[in-house]
Image (cartoon, rainbow, N blue to C red; front, side):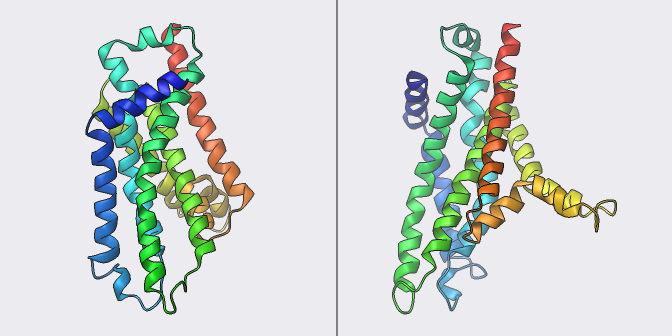
Length: 243
């Protein structure tokens, strides 16, 4: 697993993929937080990073699939996936090596946003007048969200021979799991009956809960369960090639 992890990390940062993904994410966030007048932190009368955590899921919906789209699709396209799965290593080790490499790139994209936290911290009146606990919870939620998106993207990449197709499929699945169940819960057949239960299936419900600064074990279990589900689906996708 370690060799696969190192190979994928080297692949990300020896090409432009990792740098472009991180750069685009930071540029968009910078524009939203400091340039666009409707969302600029400079136009608010209190220190907050709510805008960052509100816009980040929409950006990650495209960013994470862009990171994961090549992980298996490239192997499928080049015909090297057969060599990979026949090596004396478990499918789960292959998948986790690639998954952790993708998460490392995601982590590198999140870390620079701490500069935004320091900026808002200094802008507070008095300095430091900021709910750091809630922000920490929001960062935990954002990392769990990216973990779920990465698992979805990995699965989409494993069932496709084309990177663009894998990207589109992963983006669609991320959208469905993030927003889809909220819209489904608003259907007349569910409203006033089990609409809350339907919303709880979606990522948005649990991400919103953690973003309020309350790290509930139920939300954490949900994210890990969703990640495990798509990791296992990816395992089945690889085993199918052996069959």
